[in-house]
Structures are given as structure tokens and as C-alpha cells.
Image (tube, rainbow, N blue to C red):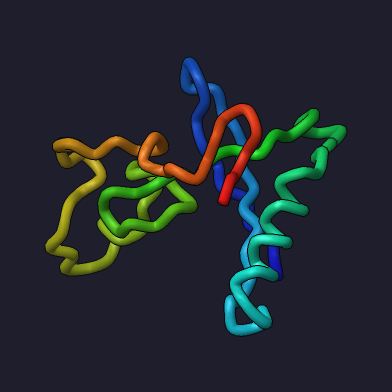
Length: 112
């Protein structure tokens, strides 16, 4: 398990760091254990003297690579040599972003 900082932009272009918690799924005994971990980390209060109190956020879905830990503007794939897919500037065309996560409720977090 490890934590990765993702530098995002908030309202007005304000630099807003996000932190993702990652784990190798092969180390988990079953899906139920993943739900326990997700709910546990989602219920914690994250305080930092540098960043203040953190809040659990819904995943940021990327329409380029379909990853859930970054928005389109931070996708690493378009930076690969000879990349032929979508660019970071491609039109969104029907992509609904964060609202696509039907298992996330902004008030109570994830639900099963």
C-alpha cells in the first residue's frame, strides 16, 4: 500500500493537492476486504499543518485512459512518443466525469 500526491487545480486555478491511496489487489484476500479498507480510509479525518483538513473525494475519471485517479488534463498517455489516441485538449463528447460514479454520494461517501 502506498500514497501518491496528485497536483490538481481547484476553483480559480488554485493549486489543490489530492492524495490517492493505492494497494496491489493481489494482496487482498477478497473483494469484501477491499470494501472494508475503502470504508475505513473513507471514514478517517486527514489533517495536515501544511494542507489543513482533507476530505474524501469521488474518483476523477479520465476519458483518455479510463483511469480513476486523475482528470483528462493530467493523463500521462498523450505524452508518450507516437501516441495516436485522444489528446488532453480533445472535445469531451458526452463524458460526464465524476458524476459517472454511481457508488459515490457527496454527502456520505461510497455506498455498496
